[in-house]
Length: 612
Image (cartoon, rainbow, N blue to C red; front, side, top):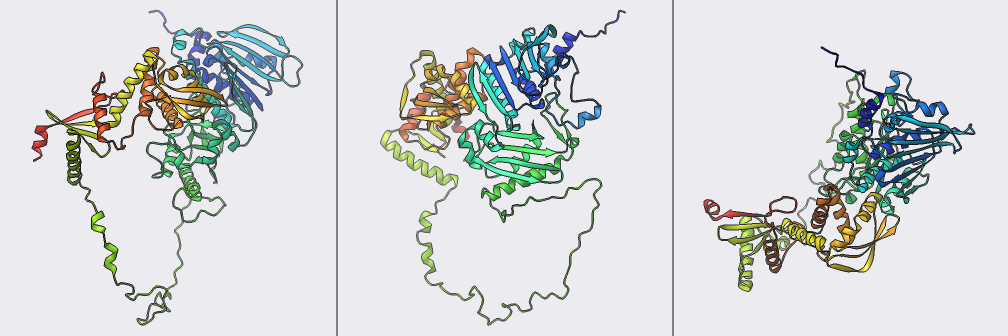
């Protein structure tokens, strides 16, 4: 039998390795920007075209590379950071210079210009699909200039699965924000299709957060700082009332490296327990410092998942620190959080010696000695035990019985029946409201129950779909134009959807600086503030985003319908309930919401009779 095991060519092996490290254009930005940080750059510029599919350019003023290093950086397993296996467990840098370059070179066209400060001439290298096309001296500034063009040009299957330019640029913004927040002492710039997205000067942590997320977030930040023998924690957490339903402002950094850690995230959510609005996530920007020997960063190819040696102890430190900061700022009931010094919590390890606690007891102590309550006739206490001011006490309860309404289901139903009778006398219709959430009306087979929020979503969805198809949406002009400040990702997405949003009834224009001006809203968007509607709309669209052109309009209509629909606890008049029923059953699919949730159910008469 012939041999079947063979070695893969380097070009194929590099493409396989690229699949682990380079998942999308944002992965390239992460690797090259982190390399620039490791090269001690204090100015980093990122230029993007077409969501990174056409061009990703990273320019830094770091140490640069020699002619030999520039060539070796694209070889597999090349690095300037690791010499021994033990070095893997004491990593203090973001990545290894050239660690991912071999993978990137296998799936793109690369052009590198680099020069060291003491050299007069730099090096210019061009690589296509792992093959060096040219290498020659060039005149360039100190540092490195990487241009990655036509990503996945030779792997069409991978390129096919990339999302829209807007979606891919959204991922790039996420990576850019993580690196910029981890390094506030470095100047960062980000451009997309030659348009300025971020200009971030050197600053401190708070100023960097405000520069990225806007001035409004400054009032939401609560400072936090804790120092222990295992870990130091500093940064900012958000006020509970400003928590958002969509994630995006949650950041952990360990030794200036961004990390994900669901276990520590639970410590934060637990500290906010019972003070957050429903289904919301608090903001946090937390910077942890720990001995690199106690951290394992190599459990995931992207090095974002971190494993700590003393994870349980860090959980307790973080939880206590969050509680302390919330207490100091009157976010939760507190006893005394006025002490400024940090606390030191002892940590139990395998080598810790446990000592029996000792308590000093005074055997001669008599709690009744010199007690001012001991003598019966004594009246010099602070509070009198005499029955004073007890006359006319019954007046305190006047009118109490009238206001004490029963709240069991039978009494509620009787009140509803009374209201129904009133409505019947006026309109001749058997329709009534239950708990400001459901519309109830008798039908031939029993009692029909309609979820008012889901019904309104279905009605609006079909209206918006019709508007998108016919471009005949009705716009309600605002009395005064509203200026709304967004983060960079939402601003980019909104501008990319401007034509579709105009078809839905929005009248918006770009104000610059991640802000928009709203001149009009869809007539069916209700009485909510434009900022509230747009925030809900973007949240819903991002959570259900699809890149299929066939379903793009449907996704927009769904998002706006959910953002504009009435709430589940909104009171409705009898006329509004009748109108909703009429509009619902005029829809093409009245039984289910745009999200597949059931709108209508019927309790049959037989089922009701069985209860009696």
